[in-house]
Length: 126
Image (cartoon, rainbow, N blue to C red; front, side):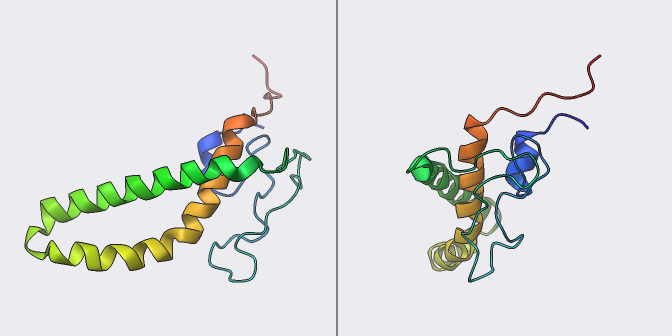
């Protein structure tokens, strides 16, 4: 098994330690009942996904960074390609951000945990 990649684990709902177990219970961020339900431990390697109470408060800052980055990119696309429709930027950004909220929430939590968990050592030593 190859060494787990943190970026892969953040993007594809995987454990940052082993790269196999699912972080959130459901695959879809748009499951209304369980979009925010996460496993307490990795089903594959047993890594603790909630190391301490209040651990994920830092994920709020990561989520904020995702929102800001998205809005800057979206604005630059509008300015460069749709300048004549710039008035629609403000009208369209709010619904788009509302739709993206579950995705950013989940990615921010996975990113925050990935910052603090070291990937497992590869079994294939050269």
